[in-house]
Length: 285
Ligand code: PLP
Image 1 (cartoon, rainbow, N blue to C red):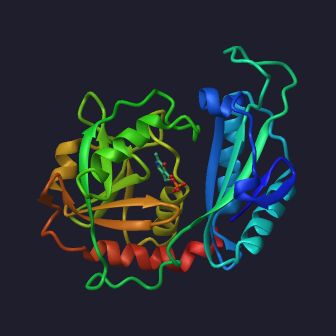
Image 2 (cartoon, rainbow, N blue to C red; image 1 turned 30 degrees about the horizontal axis):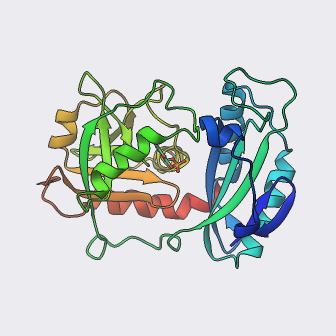
């Protein structure tokens, strides 16, 4: 794999970062992943804006212009054979040559880019042939700024592992008052009586780009109502359908939660309709 590090492209094995980099020592950085299909990115400006918001939120100066970010993304795709890739960017606060918590002045951020193989972009959905995901749930033990896409995601890693260890696909989380937050690598939607709902954006969840695209494409189509509101875990367990969204899976149907079937245990009709609306709109974001 060809990666980008601080202005240069190289084989991943030749990319070297100091162990004193604050990204390594503290997880002091921001990242983002944009899906790219044969060099065509989905929602790139939205991903870039979220990344810039994250940098702002933790006081790292954005080291590049939008145009420069876009050029690196397109170079990474081309140098790695195009096709189906997640373009991964990570910016850490940099390396001051010592381990000290306080922010150093005028530090040069470390900029890293690589690609992640993802599935080919979703074709028109067919619920009969769609494999549904199996998920588990657990109480969200992460920090209170989950809206920031920080590289410090040990909480997410441990939550994801809860499902992975059981051969399941994802862990969805709830807060101390039994309200749905999000998945360890995704946002969560439920469907009840044809109405779609997802938790409101706050510090408990990442403002997912595919979440945004799903809500906006469904609202502009107008045939399916979408609510953003507080959702209890009881509602999740009683839902007709549950979906998770992220930039590599887009909208993925869930058929099992904590070993129990979701709805009738089959991929649902609202998912099929929503996914077809999403697929048509995807490249417009
Ligand atoms: N929530 C978390 C914790 C995530 O890690 C992700 C994606 O990686 C998402 C939500 C979905 O975000 P997006 O749709 O921008 O990929």
